[in-house]
Length: 117
Length: 114
Image 1 (cartoon, each protein chain N blue to C red):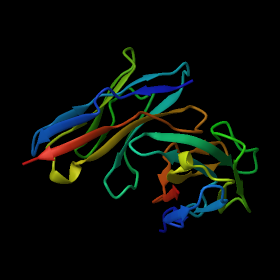
Image 2: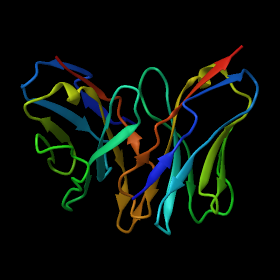
Image 3: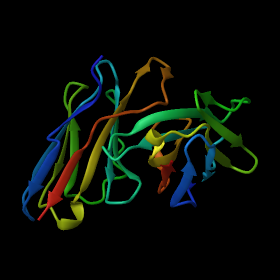
Image 4: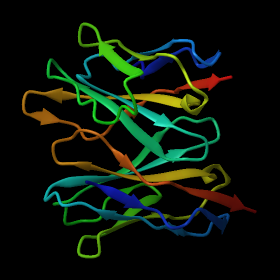
């Protein structure tokens, strides 16, 4: 079946502009995660959605970052007034949960490479 | 808070040899999971192997095995019979028992040579 998809694959923006990054999780996956990978670094957690629960926003680096998930499926990560330090690859992942059961494995999308000039 | 340490920024191994990539973790959770992911130059994160904290047997997936030493808080990845296609970044990660966010190490770049 289809995996996690992300768009755009590449985004170049000028400093100070707003950007929106989109993630389509695997159908039926109720958990959705956003991570950021800066050049040569590991992945840094940003935000986690689980069903209808309030999202875990503990990883968002500043209030310029926000995310929403509509209809329990597609998610959009928005970065306002972008800065050069926001340049990174933004990765989305999803996993399934059902009742009291869940899968630990997170399936990753191909990422969006954001470059702020 | 979870912390993952990968002390080998880069490793070389000859084709067909085995290699061990080190990972130690620091968590106060009683229940947790440990992962290894592979990231080739194309950028995608590929799941390799998972070990649960209560699993008594070391996890194995084909040529990949996880050497889990709970008392030492180590979860090393062993790749047997290395192939040129194994050249990539390898990340160790852990997840709490509540199955929320992954915490990643800084990665090890593996280069397989002829």
